[in-house]
Image 1 (cartoon, rainbow, N blue to C red):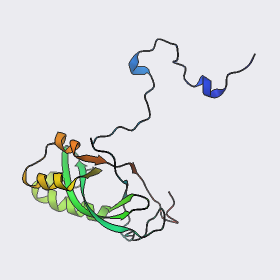
Image 2 (cartoon, helix red, strand yellow):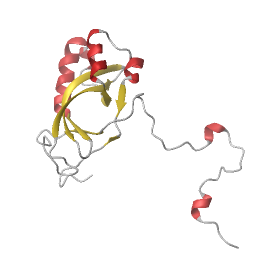
Image 3 (cartoon, one colour):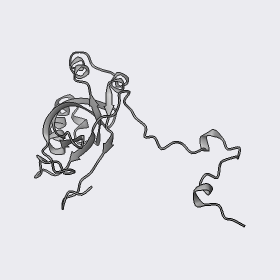
Length: 164
């Protein structure tokens, strides 16, 4: 008797009557934004390293000022126009955590002091025209999702050769 290869035995639900909710889903990542994803993103926690060279390829990074979309717990969306480092060869965007947190503390310190120090997540970027429109007319969370470019990937680099 011939054994089936391992790859043929993987999907045990084939031919069985399985409810739709229990079937395997595709591994496609869920996106919040309606616009195509841009950039690989690295939130730099190191205050002594400013990444004038790319930690991935070693090429020179450039400055790029982009509106970042940030979710601050609980239910506080924020769009912040911030200067980041950018490697055009790797399509890597690097934001410095200490600068980002000080800007958020300054903003929320006057608007909502109870939010200062809460957990946050940088969701992606938005178009500059939409960010400027949001300065005069507040944008709802639903409209912000329509103008959001998610990040392609979140990366992390460790000291000691900056290997991935």
